[in-house]
Length: 174
Ligand SMILES: [Zn+2]
Image 1 (cartoon, protein in one colour):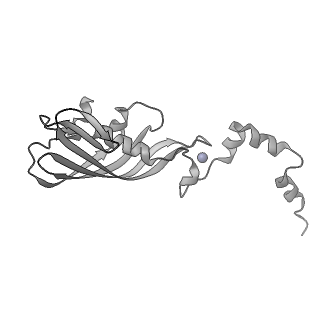
Image 2 (image 1 turned 30 degrees about the vertical axis):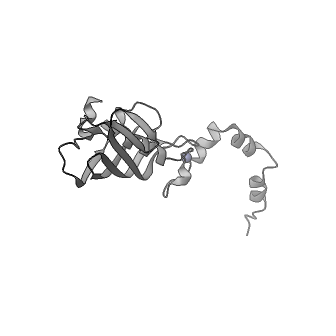
Image 3 (image 1 turned 90 degrees about the horizontal axis):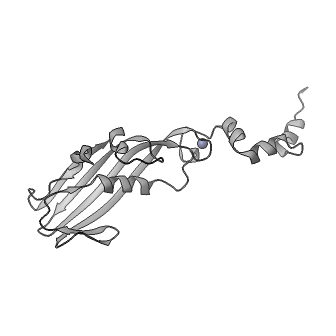
């Protein structure tokens, strides 16, 4: 996690009040979280921090796209991500998650690394099934679908397939 040091927010030396941060999220970021779903990506995350004596309120606004694979046709696609999340951090006596978006950290801490949170917000923003339907300029690769989806392939060979019947009705002489 050393290479994500850039995602440390050193809150202790900040005055009470509002502070803004901006993070660029690139391929190196995703390499730090090895898993299959997201291979790389280009996003920016704007963080607005409101600091009080024993409380930090973070708002994360993440926008951009991740490079992933269509679940259906296996096309490599850039999938858009837009996420808005809030995290409340209270300064107390120990580390504990009080709620999904409320955590307590010891008041002796002086910084918080937000990389893991941003990563989870990106994952949360993605649908369960990622496919070309969610994209504006891309459709599923029909040729590939025929190869990988045995049902589609079977239908195409079926003489009673309505798609073939429709073709038969076209009078080419006209
Ligand atoms: Zn697709």
